[in-house]
Image (cartoon, rainbow, N blue to C red):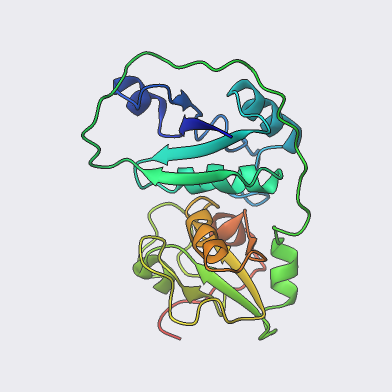
Length: 235
């Protein structure tokens, strides 16, 4: 097993200084797709599996690579972790490099292209349609990774409507998991656009809930569907 560092911060941050040897994966261009309609996929739609397979191969990720995804607390490292896991590559972790005081490089790292082979999971995502049809199902628990004020609907800086999916519990991605978080029959993580939800999903996996699912479209998709209900305030 060989270590591969993948810096998933914006290009400008990577160019200003990154860990020596770290390759760059662009959060917008490589780890998300450009969706024609946020109501179908959200603000950061999942990339096509075949395109993502090519991205990881060009980064030098192969069968024997342990990928350590690096970010500055944005959640994109966990998104990279989730995408790798989604394609069957479980040998991955994340590291927040905020406050790092070690050596940095401004030379772009390049690894030889690897033979990355995607083996997509079929059980790690959930659609808006399934959630809508199960809003009254107590077996399905939704965790909203956004800040409490966004979850309450008191502020919404990014999407056209404030609030949350009805019944969703708040699990802010920078906090510890809520008490008893792993004890539900089915668990779904979502956020604004499917990025910081991956942080919550990673925490749940590490806590033993490997069956957690991601609602990738998240609230940015949900709130743009006119007939979909939205909840605000304290439950």
